[in-house]
Image 1: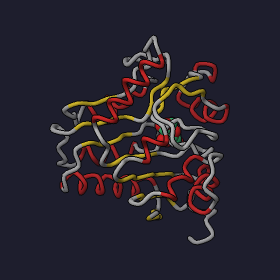
Image 2: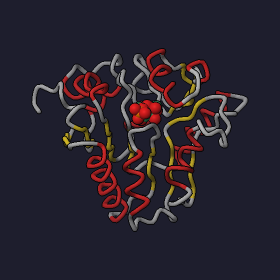
Image 3: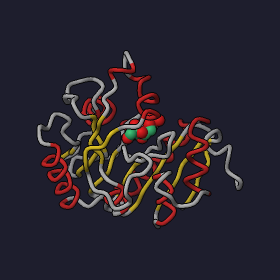
Image 4: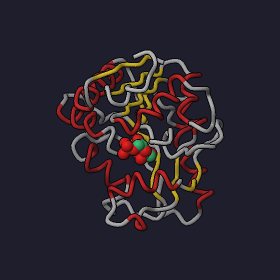
Length: 236
Ligand SMILES: O=P(O)(O)OC[C@H]1O[C@](O)(CO)[C@@H](O)[C@@H]1O
């Protein structure tokens, strides 16, 4: 794990965007993308840059079950708004939150991932150590499936909804097994509320209780964190 500590999300987002531009220059064809507040600065930097995704494919990590693509809380909408409207890809995939058959949707999405091996996967980090929506206890070999969100995640994500009860209880998430197959991973985390998860991810035992800790087992992982998120590390 290559750990880079930056001052704040503005510096970190620029760093991550530079790494993606470099990856694209070096031939990356498929980007795995994340939502949430964490990658917003990275997307701003990519939009302001000369990077061209029009011959590339993007595959997103997750989507809330029950939200339509035009719902402004959906991850489809987030991606349109934060990146795709300004920097379109030849093809972009996000799980279908309205799929009627969740097993069929998971199988469809697993085929998408198998057909489009990910060169660079972008990840955020949940306060409980989740990556994608792989909550604590998720099997390390899991593929895309419908998952139940934990209370901690529902509470954390409720800031984006009018009422906490509006936060969907389920999501489709790419599994840890699929994430681990990506060629390169860039994980970002900002703020003191991520400091425990960051410490566990980097210095703790590899355990399903803290899903991101599995990244210790993978080469080509770059972790970009700000000083607040790094504040509990023993080796700063
Ligand atoms: O970036 P945030 O909003 O802190 O959320 C943490 C992570 O959890 C998720 O909401 C779930 O995938 C991601 O979108 C995000 O990277």
